[in-house]
Image 1 (cartoon, helix red, strand yellow):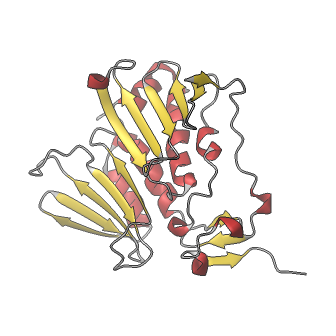
Image 2 (tube, rainbow, N blue to C red):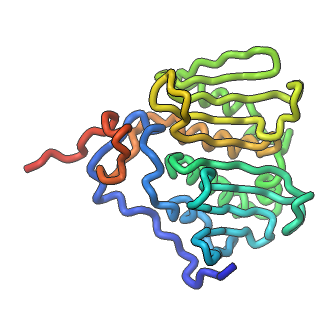
Image 3 (cartoon, rainbow, N blue to C red):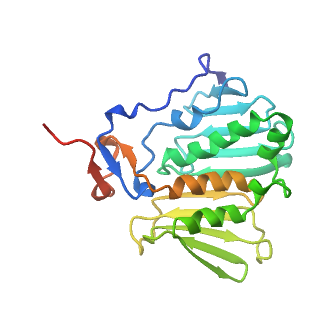
Length: 248
């Protein structure tokens, strides 16, 4: 991989955005991955790119990696390892597909940066859940969803939360499920309630620290619309966009 000399990632300039998309989960990615890299500052991360256009941020301890892989369906891959470069030491992974609003990925990377800035204790929080830390209580995820009036249903070893408009589902498969709960959390967003194809999806491994999933859930359920340039809006989501400015 090739180091990126100028580490700084510049957040997207939103001053030229001309539409607001609501609900925010239909806004699309905005096609600006630097937004998610921007919180990962040079004091804790190193940026790299390879010769096929993929971008990476690797923590100074080499335990955490954030990868943007534009040619894959799962554009974003985040993972934590107990030992640098050791696949058998993998602790958790999270993935986000191509049309996931970048703001949702940014909520997770911002939280990772905050963890790494909290010295040794924070670095451990980024790798493993702390059962004694109230911020790592999985119930915080459900509380964030309940506060946003999501419907939550429990059936045997699974919990499903559905957004008020019925377009987003979050499924959690508990340890007692009959299959090994690797990607225990799955998120799918669709354009219509009966659409068999996902607009975007995300997954969180069973061992992902819950405070990272809570950060994602809070970004997903925030009431404010997301702003975009009209040229970035897919035709299928255009009906959910309203102009930010009135023509003179």
